[in-house]
Length: 306
Image 1 (cartoon, rainbow, N blue to C red):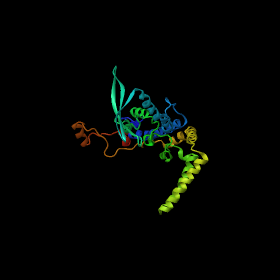
Image 2 (image 1 turned 180 degrees about the vertical axis):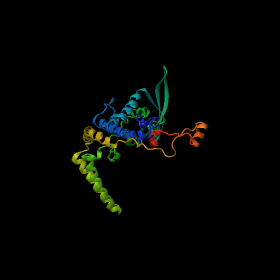
Image 3 (image 1 turned 180 degrees about the horizontal axis):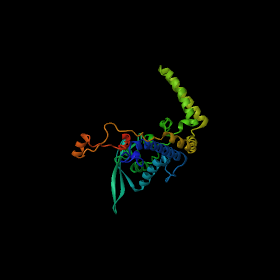
Image 4 (image 1 turned 90 degrees about the vertical axis):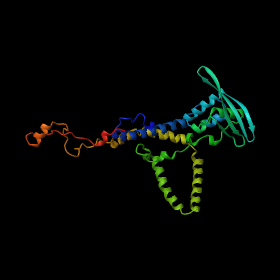
């Protein structure tokens, strides 16, 4: 069973129950994502150091990912940096990390390569390649070289809190975005722009004109209202709380009813292991077997388990 459905679906869930729980699962995941975005935009975790590097990640990352970064930053205390080899333009450092193995402290060496020309850095622990968070060994080398910032490529877009997710504007059955005033305005603008985009696809000149005008319009809107996404997300969250009645009313209409009870196809059920004498008497017409209240089977959906 996929972890996405934990708490909703198990090995004994029927097909009918799965259809009902599938929508509940998607709704719950969307609400959790919206709540996490709201927390990331309206609260922050204080920095534990005065390094600008930590401040850079605090402003960019979500709450959960910034906690992961702070964990690596705090573990820098157990690392000791030494220069192993320096060959321009690349320098090789050995970072010894003190780890607790049972009751014994053991030093494990790691190799960090730094290209000072373009500030590209990587470690053989491969934490950044595996989880997308720069490791404690890289942080130790950056602080050792007095490099107090990280390149943008080490701040992944997937962890940023200031990224506008396009999928949040898609019409879905378990959210009420489309009935909000923001949703109506968004759909109205998309419909109008669809016609403009259709006309501008004829040649590159028209396309460039449209793109240039869109960029100018975007800069004007930013200068007029500012990039105030936190207030907008506060309004959206309050609208979600106020519209819980809508979810309750619409859920009644979306409930999947029990399938209609129908007779099973084929001949009526009978006892396969009845005695031969009874079968002979029945064939001669001496005994008549009647089946009262034949069992009624529901559709096969209730008989299948996920």
